[in-house]
Picture 1: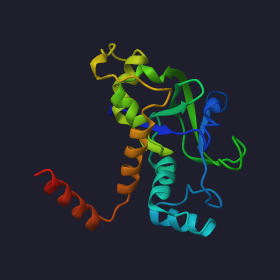
Picture 2: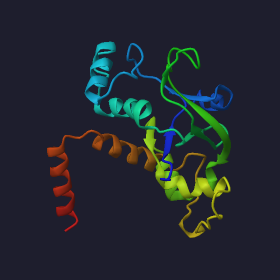
Picture 3: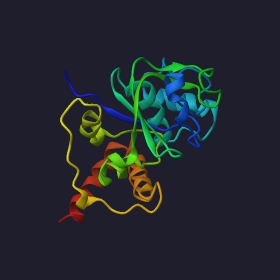
Picture 4: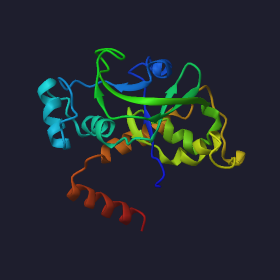
Length: 210
């Protein structure tokens, strides 16, 4: 059986949904699409739906995040929702397909996925390198680097010894957010890049690396 993927789904524009995922049994995202996107099968179709609902909203990054949420999160995948107020990350597992349901949270966050809530984990549990990834400001993104730590925390594998030598002192709860933002912007810039442009990017990167 293949390993589950790990997804981060942020809890609203102002983190207002994070504390509700356990009670609601769901996670949700916004973005206007004028309805259910379950029938869209390609990113181009989704882009058209988003542009019709709100011209200018169908950017590659936005389309990619909605598409991932609706189409790529699989049954059994881990879903992480960080909560800033408590400095915890809520661990859930996806237990069903995408649903357009403005009643679960609000009309501002109508795109939902049902989840099985597991437990919260302190953000400080993860090593700094993983926290840097989880600190991305993208709304929906893969974070498979966290999988072994999640499984150890949930008792599914032996505890992992974290090398404290790699840890840095955090100035406040989200001191690593700057690096997370940078990582998120890089991922968003590369998401859905045209294959010719991606070829040029890789060539340039390899040249820079010598």
